[in-house]
Image (cartoon, rainbow, N blue to C red):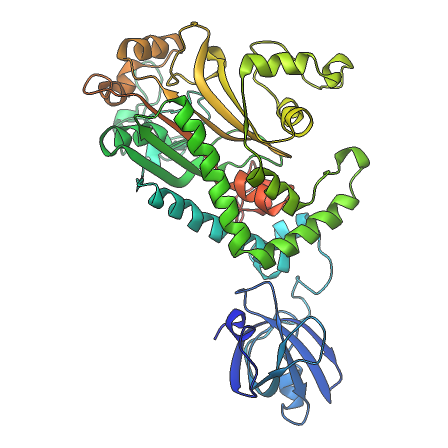
Length: 475
């Protein structure tokens, strides 16, 4: 049995075997107390070791980080904070760990643990984060399955730039400095593996739309890549994206689904990860106390999660959002770092003001200026805005971005030309508007942003196992 099951077992002096890694050992040679964890739960189980039952040469190898098996009797614990413990009769050492084991039982900085990403799963903080991440992933699939969506696997290697930003990682079989060139001196990709220039995908959306225009409701959930040189607490070069696409949905239905979705997955984790969230909530509160007063959260982690579950999301247009910001005290007192005017791409400080100060609930902003949004978004009748939406959360700003997609072929072609995109590169996408076009919509949610919000971690590099960032591809 795993430790999570053993801890739920009624102790009747029955024989059990505990396998895991040593967190701590205390006591003398005559009587030792060994804390063992196998990652199945935030809680460890204590093994009480009588020196007469286990040879001294074995106990010397029971050190922090060692992997062991303990056989013995499961009994009620007389100590506080635990219901059961194991009276050890036999200990087997699977793998030793000497004094150089870096994750000793003391406080380690998150920066240090990023350098030890191969071992940081063994800490209470990171084991809790990755159990929460698992349950969030499961809830994502469960939600869409219950809503009659089909899971579509979209390509990782692509010849199209879905966002039009050009910040993509190139995929090639050419050797460095040996790529063939054309008469004009440009790289001749016709001789490359795929016969054209290819990159790692920034989004599965365009292919997802193709699926939705036949299957009605699909979602993608896979890795995406951005070659954006951003060394921030909110950006990764490789991350996971959730992207549903729905035929016959317009902007309102898209907003309804996004709100329903995030409430479902957060509620699921709060139900299934109570112990891990209680640990992370305590960690969040302790860390919050060490921050400068102006950077402290007004709410605990659990309160922030309930904040999302218990409030209907406010819904305003971009124009209304700008008007609110222009009338705000931070703007009038020049406290915002970035200027506020119609046409800007709202910054995180603006988004957080709207959520945390003005509305005090999650906010969905719609109808953004078309000049700051992607080519595929449905153009509104005013000629200035598109049927886009951003869902804003407390403490993090934008959590979800989406839109109704432009289903009119002529309008879509005009927008492609306006943005300088080669029509030929998207011929297959445009053809879906030629043959049986339909109103449709969708959104994208960066999964790590969601995990970051739910776990209360301040840096996105701490919610993915092996972060890929500028200058860092370790592990």
